[in-house]
Image 1 (cartoon, rainbow, N blue to C red):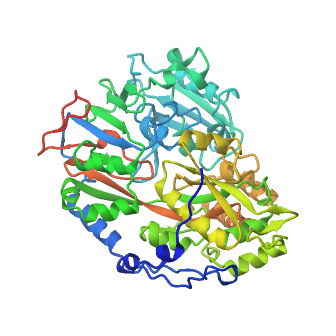
Image 2 (cartoon, one colour):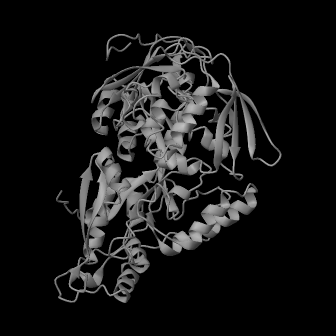
Image 3 (tube, rainbow, N blue to C red):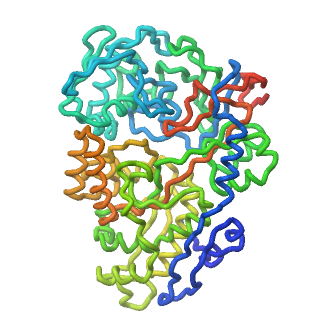
Length: 577
């Protein structure tokens, strides 16, 4: 696509931003010699977060029950997944729809305590050396087609996981320590690992246990059941109308009891603006994520405030611009560092994020013991960036307004998923900042599935995205040379050694000390531009209860319509109460 530029002056210091509590300063020079030196954003006293917190406390939609049984919940689905098989090249939406809802695992992470708790495994014992664990399975679990779960289904699942023909690279990499998992009785499995792994049990919670009789034949990557999954969870797959909706129904024989809701409809609406308007007229009950623009619109709309309550969650997720370190000019760490210093993250925070996020400079969030407070974001400093680029040989030799080296202009393309409007807007800010420094950046908007495939195949210069994270993360996949999500192919021997060694360190103090060393190496080499960590804002129909947000997303069996309200009846696709 042909990306259009926007005026930084209008964006940077608009009166509207001043009214919101943001302070933007800086010159408005447009010449190469007078690049504006930053527009700091002061978020102190910003009204949005305070108003949201007040409304959330008053609404109490995150409280548990009482809820009446029955009814339908319609959830906005902003990006239609390519399939519904979380073992095969999963993404955030596949996990949200299927993880612990359609499919279950041996264990899961409790969304409140973040502790590992039983799911399909009723109990387990681990040897003193941590290398052998015996899981005792529940005897009251039935798959959605009525077939009982046995240990042979668990063994089959792990056989598929470690089959190299199955595209489960990231999960397989995370469980590389597993030597074997075997059924030792009808309801007992034995897990053997080669060495301790600090995230072993948390990662087991991401392995969906598959019914062997359904998935044993055919190619798991393209299995017909990937669009009509069969699991054992509280909700069973009902139907998928491509481009329209994915429908789940309550599993009558779920071992955990009866979920409150009869039906959950994931309504496919790729345009968030349209999704917001559908919620306003009552066609959607839960908006999992609204943009900062929509937060302002919501707070100014009495109809929406009366219908929906906000729930908020500060996440460890981070947005990023990922360099392809095997493609010129980003093979040079000096170029990556200089380009990072040309990204005005303060302008993004102030104008786009409305101070609902915060700038980050490392993978571990504030408050995590691996977070290194000495690492600060590189400043927006065009002068220092141009000096560093000149040191690397990038100078405007032919006086055409573009930096060049060896006759090649500094020109690249940024990939952005079309579903991410905020990142699209951020890209235009970056584009203009780079243009003033003599760098031409095109923006390619791609559908999520195409964007993901291009990243996996390393077919990009720079890609903009966001990682959805747990509180405790391995990061081997993102930053190790052979990591399955190391799309930019950054390779650093020290990082590889830390990532590999830290996996076996069970002492959290020792492990986090190593992770802080890794964070410093990442900051030095700049394989990413870390931009911001978002505050997740969801809108939930005020008649709902149990809508407690967590890093594990919403727990769907806990959601229900308040006992004092009449729940929506299942049946018509868009009928409302």
